[in-house]
Length: 531
Ligand code: G4P
Image 1: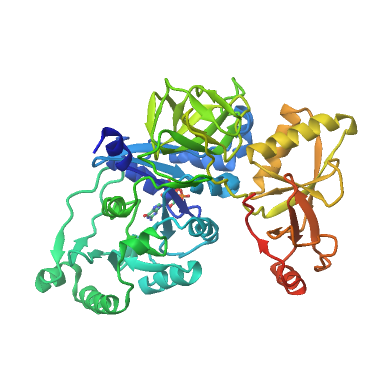
Image 2: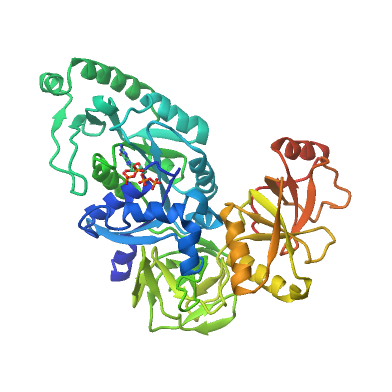
């Protein structure tokens, strides 16, 4: 195996998804702790500061000049080189959160054991399913009273429509949490609450065949319940099949407690064993092999004003094949230019490190003088292909935007278009109307504030936003077969076009979507746009 192949094959690139507060940050911190990237969990992103950043978002972002952060972390563990992509949540949930998933090869889904599947997980999960990427589930907070284990698995299966395969099984929860039963080794790993910020201690492991020791340790009631559950589980659960996991149709499930450091390392080990190496990606010339092909990457995120002093824009790209060498030139396919990437960096939380090389699976950020767009391909100068575009995700909030001073029309149009190009907002026009009045759609409401603030500060344009009641958007997939003028829907429906001229429909409720579909046989509607 060549060195290049070795480097690529030891990479695992995944996104962490969860509903806010399920424990994503805590789990990430513990992962980093095992990798030795930090000495004390919590030091990556002081929890107190993180909280502060959420509640006082506008204040802090104002000081820095808007930047909705989402980070990429890289660490080494047991010979693996791991890239974690954080998916921002809370109010700063945006289209970027979705796009981040386009750059990952698998996803870790963190679920709060007392809550089961929650709204934000559901949304992000949909994107994982669309991409058919493997999903690994960590059910967290077992040190608190959790829902019944079978109910939790049932919830995942019903809510998300994916089969589950428990890797281990919790014994009680909350005050009665005794540990987990590892199905593979048929033994119980006893719960011990290690000090926060230290690695897992040496766990007591008891084979279930040692009935006496097990009963002495976890008590008769817990042991009886466990035996009953093991029987049920072995009889009923889905068979484990790695191919089905990798196809994204079966999720392995582990239980634990990120806060008390229990079950995290076991999960990480299982995960690394099962997760795929950097996957081939589809381009217009076919699948691109990560090892055989020379350097290639695609841009999945553009962040403006990362650093106020420089008013810079950083384009984040996922390397899909080969090795990136800072001394070599690359082709920016959409721009039609061969060039050297400017200041390639690895962005670690708040830190930036200049990179000289990186491999397929890695994420790099490069300084962007305004030439990159989301979905752009970069490749070796001798190649010339384009990766499949990144879909446009359905915004869920809409507002009509008006400029206060009509004299500033040019700046207004320029500003709105540029911000849309960065992918922070989507803009629509009513059928047959100009750009004086546009409709803006966003995935997270915070983006409205971002838009207003940036237009005022960067383009010197004041705007007024008027919220619109639409919540559901559908692109017309078979636009060539449909006469938009004649299309009849419900009275609350609005016909608009996006920036690329694709027709789409806005609806207030899901009922109207169904009704319009019924009234127009043959109409194909989609929640994503791939154009
Ligand atoms: P998020 O990134 O998914 O939003 O969740 P985060 O890790 O920030 O965790 C949210 C809260 O849940 C934090 O408590 C955290 O300490 C707690 N938590 C995470 N994992 C566990 C666990 O396994 N067990 C228990 N009992 N709690 C857990 P907080 O009070 O909001 O913050 P802090 O003051 O503890 O830092």
